[in-house]
Image (cartoon, rainbow, N blue to C red; front, side, top):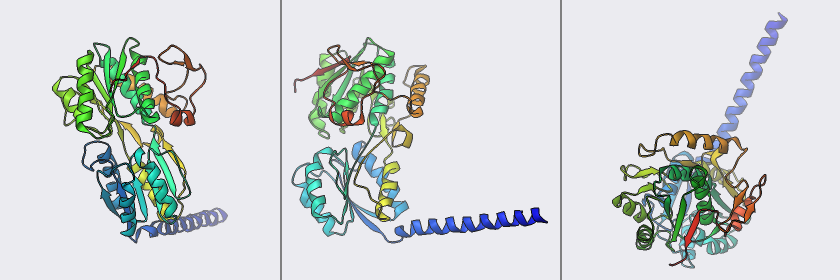
Amino acid sequence: MKKIMATILVFVCLIIIGIFLIRMNIQETDVTKKQTKVGFILNGMQNDHSWGESHYNGMEAVAKELNLDIIYKENVPEDENCVAVIEKLIDDGCKIIICNSFGYGQWELECAKAHPDIYFFHATGVEEQDNLATYFGRIYQMRYLSGIVAGLQTETNEIGYVAAFPIAEVNRGINAFTLGVRKVNPQANVYVKWSESWTGEEENAKATNELISEHNIDVLAMHTDAMSPLKIADESNIWIVGYNIDNSSRFPNTYLTAPIWNWERFYNPRILECLQGKFQGIHYWEGVETGLVGLAELTPNVKEGTAEIVEEERARLMSGTFDVFYGPIKDTEGNIKIKEGQSMTDESMLNDFFWYVEGVVVDEDK
Protein backbone atom coordinates (compact mmCIF):
# COMPACT_ATOMS: atom_id res chain seq x y z
CA MET A 1 0.00 0.00 0.00
CA LYS A 2 2.83 2.40 0.88
CA LYS A 3 4.43 1.82 -2.53
CA ILE A 4 1.12 2.51 -4.25
CA MET A 5 0.60 5.72 -2.27
CA ALA A 6 4.16 6.82 -3.03
CA THR A 7 3.62 6.17 -6.73
CA ILE A 8 0.37 8.16 -6.69
CA LEU A 9 2.10 11.03 -4.86
CA VAL A 10 4.89 11.14 -7.44
CA PHE A 11 2.34 11.07 -10.26
CA VAL A 12 0.37 13.95 -8.70
CA CYS A 13 3.59 15.96 -8.25
CA LEU A 14 4.47 15.46 -11.90
CA ILE A 15 1.04 16.67 -12.95
CA ILE A 16 1.39 19.77 -10.77
CA ILE A 17 4.86 20.51 -12.18
CA GLY A 18 3.53 20.01 -15.72
CA ILE A 19 0.67 22.44 -15.13
CA PHE A 20 3.10 24.95 -13.66
CA LEU A 21 5.40 24.71 -16.68
CA ILE A 22 2.47 25.06 -19.07
CA ARG A 23 1.29 28.18 -17.22
CA MET A 24 4.82 29.58 -17.30
CA ASN A 25 4.97 28.97 -21.04
CA ILE A 26 1.62 30.71 -21.51
CA GLN A 27 2.92 33.69 -19.54
CA GLU A 28 6.07 33.70 -21.68
CA THR A 29 4.06 33.81 -24.89
CA ASP A 30 1.53 36.39 -23.65
CA VAL A 31 3.93 39.10 -24.83
CA THR A 32 3.30 38.10 -28.44
CA LYS A 33 -0.47 38.62 -28.31
CA LYS A 34 -0.02 42.29 -29.13
CA GLN A 35 1.69 43.04 -32.44
CA THR A 36 4.99 44.89 -32.14
CA LYS A 37 6.38 47.19 -34.81
CA VAL A 38 10.04 46.75 -35.76
CA GLY A 39 11.98 49.10 -38.00
CA PHE A 40 14.70 47.43 -40.08
CA ILE A 41 17.26 49.58 -41.89
CA LEU A 42 19.17 47.97 -44.77
CA ASN A 43 22.20 49.30 -46.59
CA GLY A 44 21.04 47.36 -49.65
CA MET A 45 17.93 45.53 -50.84
CA GLN A 46 15.92 42.88 -49.05
CA ASN A 47 16.02 40.67 -52.17
CA ASP A 48 19.68 41.17 -53.07
CA HIS A 49 20.52 37.43 -52.91
CA SER A 50 23.14 38.45 -50.37
CA TRP A 51 23.54 40.24 -47.02
CA GLY A 52 20.22 42.05 -47.08
CA GLU A 53 18.28 38.96 -48.05
CA SER A 54 19.91 36.90 -45.30
CA HIS A 55 18.55 39.35 -42.71
CA TYR A 56 15.18 39.59 -44.42
CA ASN A 57 14.74 35.82 -44.43
CA GLY A 58 15.65 35.61 -40.76
CA MET A 59 13.32 38.43 -39.75
CA GLU A 60 10.40 37.08 -41.74
CA ALA A 61 10.71 33.73 -39.95
CA VAL A 62 10.75 35.53 -36.60
CA ALA A 63 7.84 37.83 -37.54
CA LYS A 64 5.46 34.91 -37.80
CA GLU A 65 6.49 33.45 -34.45
CA LEU A 66 6.58 36.67 -32.43
CA ASN A 67 3.74 38.60 -34.11
CA LEU A 68 5.89 41.40 -35.50
CA ASP A 69 5.01 44.10 -38.01
CA ILE A 70 8.33 44.79 -39.71
CA ILE A 71 8.92 47.95 -41.70
CA TYR A 72 11.92 47.59 -44.01
CA LYS A 73 13.82 50.61 -45.31
CA GLU A 74 16.14 49.74 -48.19
CA ASN A 75 19.27 51.43 -49.56
CA VAL A 76 19.52 53.77 -46.58
CA PRO A 77 22.75 55.85 -46.75
CA GLU A 78 25.35 55.06 -44.10
CA ASP A 79 25.68 58.69 -43.06
CA GLU A 80 23.74 61.38 -41.17
CA ASN A 81 20.80 60.92 -43.56
CA CYS A 82 19.92 57.66 -41.82
CA VAL A 83 18.88 59.63 -38.71
CA ALA A 84 15.75 60.97 -40.41
CA VAL A 85 14.82 57.43 -41.46
CA ILE A 86 15.23 56.15 -37.91
CA GLU A 87 13.22 59.04 -36.48
CA LYS A 88 10.39 58.39 -38.97
CA LEU A 89 10.27 54.73 -37.97
CA ILE A 90 9.99 55.70 -34.31
CA ASP A 91 7.25 58.22 -35.14
CA ASP A 92 5.42 55.42 -36.93
CA GLY A 93 5.36 53.39 -33.73
CA CYS A 94 8.40 51.13 -33.99
CA LYS A 95 9.59 49.95 -30.58
CA ILE A 96 12.65 48.14 -31.93
CA ILE A 97 15.12 49.53 -34.48
CA ILE A 98 17.68 47.34 -36.27
CA CYS A 99 20.46 48.61 -38.54
CA ASN A 100 22.33 46.01 -40.56
CA SER A 101 25.63 47.66 -41.46
CA PHE A 102 28.75 48.96 -39.71
CA GLY A 103 28.50 52.47 -41.16
CA TYR A 104 25.29 53.29 -39.25
CA GLY A 105 27.09 53.10 -35.91
CA GLN A 106 27.62 56.76 -35.05
CA TRP A 107 24.14 57.81 -36.09
CA GLU A 108 22.31 54.89 -34.51
CA LEU A 109 24.13 55.55 -31.24
CA GLU A 110 22.92 59.17 -31.30
CA CYS A 111 19.34 58.03 -31.90
CA ALA A 112 19.58 55.47 -29.09
CA LYS A 113 20.69 58.18 -26.67
CA ALA A 114 17.79 60.39 -27.77
CA HIS A 115 15.23 57.58 -27.38
CA PRO A 116 16.03 55.57 -24.21
CA ASP A 117 12.62 53.87 -24.38
CA ILE A 118 13.37 52.26 -27.77
CA TYR A 119 15.46 49.10 -28.21
CA PHE A 120 18.24 49.33 -30.81
CA PHE A 121 20.35 46.63 -32.47
CA HIS A 122 23.40 47.28 -34.63
CA ALA A 123 24.81 44.49 -36.83
CA THR A 124 28.64 44.45 -36.97
CA GLY A 125 28.70 47.38 -34.54
CA VAL A 126 31.26 47.94 -31.79
CA GLU A 127 29.70 50.43 -29.35
CA GLU A 128 26.85 49.55 -26.98
CA GLN A 129 24.79 51.27 -24.33
CA ASP A 130 21.78 50.48 -22.12
CA ASN A 131 19.27 50.37 -24.99
CA LEU A 132 21.68 49.54 -27.84
CA ALA A 133 23.10 46.08 -28.46
CA THR A 134 25.68 45.20 -31.12
CA TYR A 135 25.92 41.80 -32.70
CA PHE A 136 27.68 39.66 -35.24
CA GLY A 137 28.54 36.02 -35.78
CA ARG A 138 31.85 34.21 -35.90
CA ILE A 139 31.57 33.88 -39.64
CA TYR A 140 35.35 33.63 -39.72
CA GLN A 141 34.89 30.01 -38.58
CA MET A 142 32.95 29.28 -41.76
CA ARG A 143 35.41 31.24 -43.86
CA TYR A 144 38.11 28.95 -42.51
CA LEU A 145 36.12 25.91 -43.66
CA SER A 146 35.43 27.48 -47.06
CA GLY A 147 39.17 28.19 -47.35
CA ILE A 148 39.80 24.46 -47.02
CA VAL A 149 37.42 23.90 -49.94
CA ALA A 150 39.22 26.54 -52.03
CA GLY A 151 42.69 25.24 -51.13
CA LEU A 152 41.81 21.76 -52.27
CA GLN A 153 40.04 22.99 -55.42
CA THR A 154 42.68 25.30 -56.88
CA GLU A 155 45.04 24.04 -59.57
CA THR A 156 46.92 27.31 -60.12
CA ASN A 157 47.45 28.01 -56.39
CA GLU A 158 46.22 31.55 -57.03
CA ILE A 159 42.92 32.34 -55.31
CA GLY A 160 41.17 35.69 -55.68
CA TYR A 161 39.34 37.50 -52.89
CA VAL A 162 37.18 40.58 -53.53
CA ALA A 163 36.77 42.56 -50.31
CA ALA A 164 34.91 45.76 -49.51
CA PHE A 165 37.04 47.60 -46.93
CA PRO A 166 40.16 46.84 -44.85
CA ILE A 167 38.33 46.93 -41.51
CA ALA A 168 38.88 44.39 -38.72
CA GLU A 169 35.80 42.37 -39.68
CA VAL A 170 36.94 41.91 -43.26
CA ASN A 171 40.61 41.34 -42.41
CA ARG A 172 39.58 38.69 -39.88
CA GLY A 173 37.71 36.87 -42.62
CA ILE A 174 40.55 37.11 -45.13
CA ASN A 175 42.96 35.67 -42.59
CA ALA A 176 40.64 32.86 -41.52
CA PHE A 177 39.99 31.92 -45.14
CA THR A 178 43.72 31.89 -45.90
CA LEU A 179 44.48 29.75 -42.86
CA GLY A 180 41.97 27.24 -44.22
CA VAL A 181 43.56 27.39 -47.68
CA ARG A 182 47.05 26.94 -46.29
CA LYS A 183 46.08 24.09 -43.99
CA VAL A 184 45.49 21.85 -47.00
CA ASN A 185 47.64 23.65 -49.58
CA PRO A 186 50.69 25.52 -48.19
CA GLN A 187 51.73 26.59 -51.71
CA ALA A 188 48.57 28.58 -52.44
CA ASN A 189 48.25 32.35 -52.09
CA VAL A 190 45.14 34.49 -51.64
CA TYR A 191 45.14 37.71 -53.66
CA VAL A 192 42.97 40.48 -52.19
CA LYS A 193 41.52 43.39 -54.13
CA TRP A 194 39.55 46.16 -52.38
CA SER A 195 36.33 47.28 -54.03
CA GLU A 196 35.60 50.08 -51.51
CA SER A 197 31.91 49.27 -51.63
CA TRP A 198 29.60 46.76 -49.98
CA THR A 199 26.82 46.87 -52.53
CA GLY A 200 28.15 48.72 -55.59
CA GLU A 201 28.02 46.36 -58.56
CA GLU A 202 30.38 48.42 -60.73
CA GLU A 203 33.02 48.82 -58.03
CA ASN A 204 32.99 45.12 -57.22
CA ALA A 205 32.99 44.15 -60.88
CA LYS A 206 36.08 46.31 -61.42
CA ALA A 207 37.91 44.66 -58.53
CA THR A 208 36.97 41.20 -59.80
CA ASN A 209 38.09 41.88 -63.36
CA GLU A 210 41.40 43.29 -62.13
CA LEU A 211 42.06 40.19 -60.06
CA ILE A 212 41.37 37.95 -63.02
CA SER A 213 43.53 39.99 -65.40
CA GLU A 214 46.46 40.36 -63.00
CA HIS A 215 46.64 36.80 -61.62
CA ASN A 216 45.99 33.24 -62.70
CA ILE A 217 42.87 32.99 -60.55
CA ASP A 218 40.89 29.75 -60.68
CA VAL A 219 38.90 30.18 -57.43
CA LEU A 220 37.21 33.41 -56.32
CA ALA A 221 36.00 34.22 -52.80
CA MET A 222 34.42 37.43 -51.57
CA HIS A 223 33.49 39.65 -48.63
CA THR A 224 31.10 42.01 -50.31
CA ASP A 225 27.35 42.05 -50.82
CA ALA A 226 27.32 42.65 -54.57
CA MET A 227 26.49 39.89 -57.04
CA SER A 228 28.85 41.01 -59.81
CA PRO A 229 31.87 38.99 -58.55
CA LEU A 230 29.78 35.81 -58.71
CA LYS A 231 28.49 36.58 -62.20
CA ILE A 232 31.93 37.43 -63.58
CA ALA A 233 33.52 34.35 -62.03
CA ASP A 234 30.77 32.16 -63.46
CA GLU A 235 31.17 33.66 -66.94
CA SER A 236 34.93 33.14 -66.68
CA ASN A 237 34.58 29.49 -65.57
CA ILE A 238 36.20 30.27 -62.23
CA TRP A 239 35.15 28.33 -59.13
CA ILE A 240 33.03 30.36 -56.70
CA VAL A 241 33.05 30.59 -52.91
CA GLY A 242 30.09 32.85 -52.18
CA TYR A 243 28.91 34.67 -49.07
CA ASN A 244 25.78 35.44 -47.01
CA ILE A 245 23.32 32.98 -48.58
CA ASP A 246 23.55 29.85 -50.71
CA ASN A 247 23.49 30.93 -54.37
CA SER A 248 24.42 27.53 -55.79
CA SER A 249 21.15 27.30 -57.74
CA ARG A 250 22.05 30.47 -59.64
CA PHE A 251 25.54 29.27 -60.57
CA PRO A 252 25.27 25.47 -60.75
CA ASN A 253 28.38 24.93 -62.88
CA THR A 254 30.92 26.91 -60.82
CA TYR A 255 29.61 27.24 -57.27
CA LEU A 256 31.46 25.37 -54.51
CA THR A 257 30.02 26.58 -51.18
CA ALA A 258 29.60 29.73 -49.07
CA PRO A 259 29.75 30.94 -45.48
CA ILE A 260 26.09 31.71 -44.74
CA TRP A 261 23.88 33.31 -42.08
CA ASN A 262 20.88 31.88 -40.23
CA TRP A 263 19.74 35.14 -38.63
CA GLU A 264 16.55 33.75 -37.14
CA ARG A 265 18.79 31.96 -34.62
CA PHE A 266 19.75 35.39 -33.26
CA TYR A 267 16.67 37.52 -33.86
CA ASN A 268 14.17 35.17 -32.27
CA PRO A 269 15.62 35.04 -28.73
CA ARG A 270 16.83 38.65 -28.74
CA ILE A 271 13.52 40.17 -29.87
CA LEU A 272 11.61 37.93 -27.47
CA GLU A 273 13.79 39.39 -24.71
CA CYS A 274 12.73 42.87 -25.81
CA LEU A 275 9.07 41.88 -25.57
CA GLN A 276 9.68 40.44 -22.10
CA GLY A 277 11.58 43.52 -20.89
CA LYS A 278 14.82 41.52 -20.64
CA PHE A 279 16.86 43.41 -23.24
CA GLN A 280 20.61 43.64 -22.65
CA GLY A 281 22.75 46.38 -24.14
CA ILE A 282 25.76 44.15 -24.75
CA HIS A 283 27.82 42.80 -27.63
CA TYR A 284 26.76 39.41 -29.00
CA TRP A 285 29.24 37.32 -30.96
CA GLU A 286 27.88 33.86 -31.61
CA GLY A 287 29.62 31.01 -33.37
CA VAL A 288 29.11 27.61 -34.92
CA GLU A 289 27.66 26.22 -31.70
CA THR A 290 24.47 28.32 -31.98
CA GLY A 291 23.81 27.68 -35.67
CA LEU A 292 23.89 31.40 -36.47
CA VAL A 293 26.79 30.83 -38.89
CA GLY A 294 26.88 27.94 -41.29
CA LEU A 295 28.50 26.59 -44.43
CA ALA A 296 26.33 26.05 -47.47
CA GLU A 297 26.10 22.43 -48.58
CA LEU A 298 29.07 21.51 -50.75
CA THR A 299 28.05 21.19 -54.38
CA PRO A 300 28.97 18.30 -56.68
CA ASN A 301 31.65 20.63 -58.12
CA VAL A 302 34.02 20.17 -55.16
CA LYS A 303 36.83 17.65 -55.40
CA GLU A 304 36.43 14.19 -53.97
CA GLY A 305 37.50 13.93 -50.34
CA THR A 306 36.84 17.59 -49.58
CA ALA A 307 33.69 16.98 -47.54
CA GLU A 308 35.47 14.60 -45.16
CA ILE A 309 38.20 17.12 -44.33
CA VAL A 310 35.67 19.94 -43.88
CA GLU A 311 33.60 17.83 -41.50
CA GLU A 312 36.66 16.93 -39.45
CA GLU A 313 37.48 20.61 -39.01
CA ARG A 314 33.85 21.53 -38.33
CA ALA A 315 33.81 18.92 -35.56
CA ARG A 316 36.93 20.49 -34.05
CA LEU A 317 35.24 23.89 -34.04
CA MET A 318 32.08 22.44 -32.51
CA SER A 319 34.09 20.74 -29.76
CA GLY A 320 35.16 24.07 -28.29
CA THR A 321 38.75 22.87 -27.96
CA PHE A 322 39.86 24.58 -31.18
CA ASP A 323 39.28 27.87 -32.92
CA VAL A 324 40.74 29.36 -36.07
CA PHE A 325 43.26 31.76 -34.55
CA TYR A 326 45.23 29.34 -32.39
CA GLY A 327 49.01 29.62 -32.69
CA PRO A 328 51.50 29.36 -34.06
CA ILE A 329 50.46 31.89 -36.72
CA LYS A 330 52.83 34.10 -38.72
CA ASP A 331 52.14 37.32 -40.59
CA THR A 332 53.17 38.09 -44.17
CA GLU A 333 56.62 39.15 -42.98
CA GLY A 334 57.22 35.85 -41.22
CA ASN A 335 56.81 37.29 -37.74
CA ILE A 336 55.09 35.15 -35.11
CA LYS A 337 51.86 36.98 -34.27
CA ILE A 338 50.25 34.23 -32.20
CA LYS A 339 52.58 31.88 -30.34
CA GLU A 340 52.10 28.15 -30.11
CA GLY A 341 49.73 27.28 -27.31
CA GLN A 342 48.15 30.74 -27.39
CA SER A 343 45.02 32.10 -29.03
CA MET A 344 43.91 35.50 -30.21
CA THR A 345 41.47 37.15 -27.82
CA ASP A 346 38.00 38.21 -28.87
CA GLU A 347 38.90 41.83 -28.19
CA SER A 348 41.89 41.64 -30.52
CA MET A 349 39.92 39.86 -33.22
CA LEU A 350 37.19 42.49 -33.06
CA ASN A 351 39.36 45.59 -32.88
CA ASP A 352 43.03 44.97 -33.73
CA PHE A 353 43.02 42.89 -36.89
CA PHE A 354 45.09 45.06 -39.20
CA TRP A 355 47.67 42.52 -40.26
CA TYR A 356 47.57 39.49 -42.56
CA VAL A 357 48.67 35.90 -42.24
CA GLU A 358 51.19 34.19 -44.48
CA GLY A 359 49.74 33.57 -47.91
CA VAL A 360 47.77 36.82 -48.17
CA VAL A 361 48.81 39.21 -50.94
CA VAL A 362 46.98 42.55 -50.71
CA ASP A 363 46.79 44.74 -53.77
CA GLU A 364 46.72 48.27 -52.38
CA ASP A 365 46.01 49.87 -55.76
CA LYS A 366 42.43 51.11 -55.87
